[in-house]
Amino acid sequence: MSIQKPTLPKGTRDFGPQTMAKRNYILETIKSTFKLFGFQQLETPSMENLSVLTGKYGDEGDQLLYKILNSGDFLKKVSAEKLAEGPNTVLPLVAEKGLRYDLTVPFARYVVMNRNDIVFPFKRFQIQPVWRADRPQRGRYREFYQCDADVVGTDSLVCEAEIILMIKRVFSALQLTDYSIKINNRKILTGISEVIGEPGRESDLCVSIDKLDKIGWEKVQEELEQKGFSKESIDKLGPIIDMNSRDKFEFLQIFLASSEVGLQGLNELREVFELLKSFGEDDEFVDFDVVLARGLSYYTGAIFEVKVNNVSIGSVSGGGRYDNLTGVFGLEGVSGVGFSFGVDRLYDVLEELELFPEESLKSTTLMVAHFGEDALSHGLKVLTEARKLGISAEIFPDDAKMKKQFNYADKKNIPFVIIIGSEEIKSGEVTLKNMQSGEQRQIGLQDALKQISQSI
RNA sequence: GUGGUUGUAGCUCAGCUGGUUAGAGCGCUGGUUUGUGGAUCCAGAGGUCGCCGGUUCGAACCCGGUCUUCCACCCCA
Image (cartoon, rainbow, N blue to C red):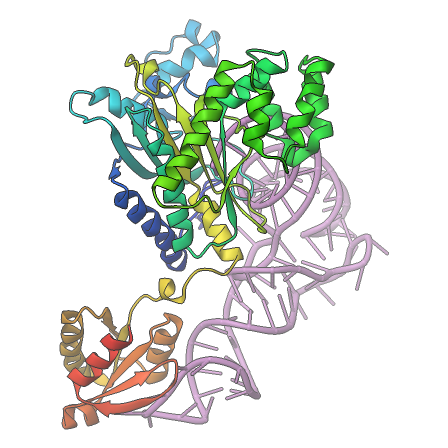
């Protein structure tokens, strides 16, 4: 029997202790911010019934869903004729569950199932892994975490403003100082498509315009042409693309004059900026970006996207307002606005900018090193005393050489070591060593612990 | 899903157009120091060269398949 090397499924990762420490630093910051703004946590199962998931993400999305093979004899319902009809017929017969693809659909399902108990507006946040059978790349995984916050059951633009505030709070807590929160409104895009003479085609327009940053204006024009946009329409788009320096509100007020919905979007956006002022906040970091589209087709109002400047990573957060979250599950009229932090990408950003604080890496504060059995049992009391004071402490559990014990403390980044041996047992004191400075001296246990608590 | 790319020690990589017992640095273990860690010095352990098959007298090297990695497209966080 040959021993096989264990491997991880494609596109999945382990998070080791150091990685987890850093991830938790990010996650805790986000979580506390959500809570501060009155959001409550929701968790839903990793698996949903396939009927809940399919058809919600388009044909491509369905391809990317992980399906779970039925337990037991999963071929029970598959006859030879059915099999001959191909995979689309067989799939529902062999799999009735799937792994969640995002957090929005499970959330919608939850809202519908609990509509009588939920008090609207309902503010929930949810931080859980999702799965997609995509082909992995850097920063793209088959299992990754989403970090969503949504408010449903209100049209108030206060929610939009608060999303901006939450993003600002999280980023400032993470010491990020160079980033921009891009904001736009889907209605403005609709208005633009009307004004240029291509009404109802804003989806196609959005998808192409969204690539402006990546591929440039020339290529966007080509793509639009390919999609059947007329030359005149595309030309009318020109002023929008290079309006960056002018007053956007002023310009669009005139440009969109003939489009009711466009003007409405413009007003909504204006109000969001007004609300920010009412909060006593400025619009630092906030950019009105007319060409921000986001590929997602279900946004109907505000659209957000956050980019950290001068790093190689794309957007780290995004979201928007949508109508009718729960319509597919038979509950009409529940609209909302939500956004999401890309934890994995934030991690990469902080790593690239070296912004993880030292403290986020420390595990144990104090380690007890000892010589032999007597010293070890003496050391256990030290642990108890330390833990009473809230100092995270551990003892080297084996009877090992000092060198080995110190090595362990060093590798684990433990800042303090208390040494116990026959001398200390005799004198009733302990030897406290500061691992960073290398200083050490014999003092009473309580003094030593006091010193440690003060330094953390 | 389409096209390409990568895979040698725990890690980062050498390995000449296929030729005996596959190398380095870092790390690891032990010693120098049987009461002291983090750049000293010495010694040592560790590899079915991703996996399966083929070509060959002979394969880490060539061919096919498969898995994995990364990249572009599609799409997306």
